[in-house]
Image (cartoon, rainbow, N blue to C red; front, top):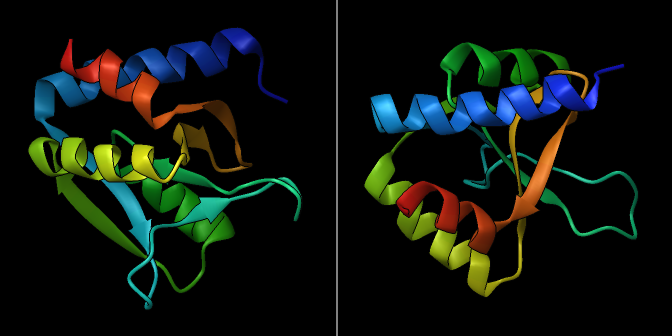
Length: 115
């Protein structure tokens, strides 16, 4: 089990990494949709993004068989977050392969990365 400190450190790493590299990674399915995770059928899915390709690949290997690694430029990610925010999607960033991590609204993440 991951501690709240580990989860927060991983989120901070996401912010630091994308500020430095201007790249975000996702898992994308054959249908063109990004990998998403729900704890149960009553919860809206969280759309997952990572700041390092190896983090995304670990999740693909453990939970998203058939998905492929996708690189997203920062500018495109901002546009994507705006679209997801209009649909009220929540975002999961730098989650561990066991699907543990920080989740936040698209709007909150946008505020964090463009400020």
